[in-house]
Image 1 (cartoon, rainbow, N blue to C red):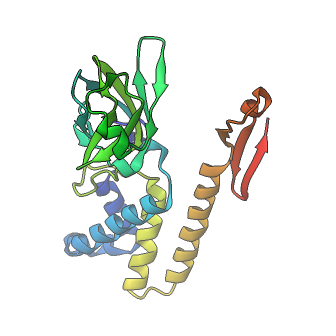
Image 2 (cartoon, rainbow, N blue to C red; image 1 turned 180 degrees about the vertical axis):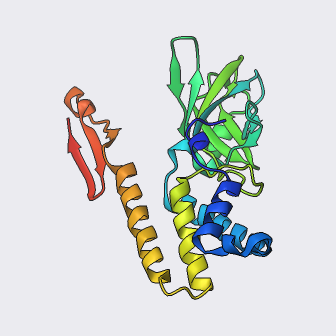
Length: 235
């Protein structure tokens, strides 16, 4: 299990908490009658928060074995047996040797494809018919190192853990449920959720650094620092 996701509570635990905060626990066994809607509030919260954040727990790396004379490969993490969404791929590297890794550039042109007799070390990749396409066609075995952001984790069984901070999922569901049941403090719960979501967004964005490749050696040492208020260029 992903270590960060393992810190989050399960769907079952969040359902128990939500029932308690809504006052349903005092109804005894009758409180279970609301399980379907309680579960749906939490699942909606899980989906919403995932869409608002950039969950570091979902950032993964995997390898795909590349064979000579074969240029199409499934976007799939065989180690964890999960599909890779090409739109969530962050980078693709070719492992040339134990000490050399070359980044592949995205984008293969029709002119490239016309050179179908060429066999060499791949330098580009693209998505063709739902598969990873390489160019030139590999001349020998390699490994591709793919870094990507995984899709939202399953959140249906009681034992499934949230792939985003569980407190945000809980607060979203609480605000939605209070509004649904017309509790007078529904707006206060919604405001608390929005404030915590904003703080989490700021926390994730602060101190991120991106290297800027310029013409000179000095330029290559500069870093683009991402902050909550924008981007700055610094050493």
